[in-house]
Image (cartoon, helix red, strand yellow):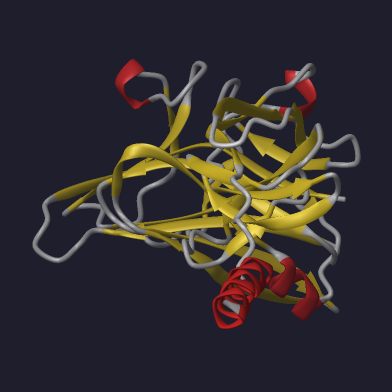
Length: 285
């Protein structure tokens, strides 16, 4: 009898110790982050609210828990009502593998109640921060500030303003580079210096194209002109958006001003191609 009791006690202690080593897993509450939209109370200041937010930096009561795709279903372990914060992330200079917390968009927040296993749908919204400086906006609504970079090149075509509904992203106009066998190249620059800082700075651009094109910057230092193409855009016949980081360029040249350059070439074997652009912004602090 003593042997049986000893065995029972030993078994009880064993299963108790197993529960200590392998405690029951907590069940998360889920948030389905469907999309991330940008809004504005002052379009004259911010220009277009078009965006392409691809990820979210997620915080629970100010504690960081990870970066998630947008859209995504996010598991959140909480044992009390909590504040969930979402920071908008973008493809840095178009690179899907390089997600960047965009410094010029605000965070979105929501209050989440404890509901293990249940999912709450949420559409996040954000604005440009109050500290954002819009150094330059070209939305092609009232004109076009781009000029042909090399007037002597007869083969170059200009970036022109168009207003046909099928070519305009939003509003009344967009910019077009129409390439052909007669004009197989196009290289353009905006017509005035844009003040810029050497800290956080980005160029935003909406685009639609059936050929690749490049975005560059030009600056002047000690009377010497420097330029560099810093972003490449692949063909995409649906309107999209890119956020191009300017920090490397402005840091390398200690630039306090710049001009924006855009160029494209007719692909080999093609008789025509196009690049459409809109809502080009240079922003910084």
